Image 1 (spheres, rainbow, N blue to C red):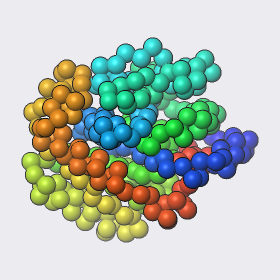
Image 2 (image 1 turned 180 degrees about the vertical axis):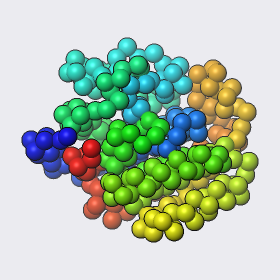
Image 3 (image 1 turned 90 degrees about the vertical axis):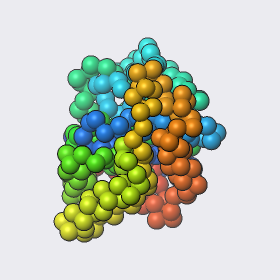
Image 4 (image 1 turned 60 degrees about the horizontal axis):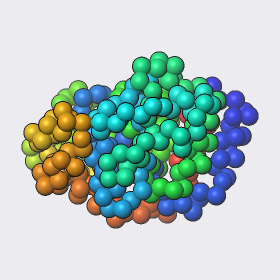
Amino acid sequence: MVTGGQARTLKNIVSSGMKSSSLRVLAVSSGKGGVGKTNIVANLAYAFAKMNKRVLVVDADLGLNNIDILLGLAPKFHIGHVLSGEKSVEEIIVDGPAGIQLLPAGGGLQELTQLDGEKKVLLMEELDRVSSGYDFLIFDTGAGVSTNVTYFCSAAHEILLVATTEPTSLTDVYALIKILHTKHAQKHFRMIINSVASEREAQLILRNLMAVTDRFLPNVSIKYLGYVLSDPNVPKAVRQQKAFMELYPYSKVSQCVDQLAQKMAGEKRSGTDEEQRPLFWRTAFSVQ
């Protein structure tokens, strides 16, 4: 529970000078594991960095360390050290490929899986200090519908959801959308369909999902961001602990992610978004 004093602290953060910042904060989630979400985050960040965008990836699957392993990194410190007051954010950030910077989670630390209000305030204050130096801040959330997942999704400018053709992937991502909408007043979502044979297959999956949300969640908006083709180079890159865009830049999967990055980098946050969500922690004090 966030106390009144903590809420006031976050409101003070909200009133800070970042309202004019060009920073875009993305929360990437999926509803379930095994859909390639972290791989998309890592390679999307890589693509942004190759475009000379300044990128900070926050491994928001707290208590587990996934993205640093995926990229072959071995950080000495993690978010747990920040939340305990032992380290600042700057002291734990590690450099990744192409100039990506990563804020690592704490592997095997159960106490990080359910942050209390005080820890959320501390984390957001630390991010506030460093975020103005970046173009993109990307939360790689955990799978499922835990309070940490809904917290980071609700605190971002944009929620990107990753799904595959598997029926369980679609039912779980729908469950996440429903919770974020009914309990946290989120209305706008963007979809990436991963590991498909063609764009036609991706659009079919999206239409099936939208048919359900249009019927049961009529106030929800789901926009198609793009698709990522299935490619044998993906597991090859995972085994080598490298971004597939680094090892196989001309592969079809890399071309898909590059198109996503080009599309997003060419966008500007709408005036409505600027007005409604000037800071990514605008709603943080109301999210449990």
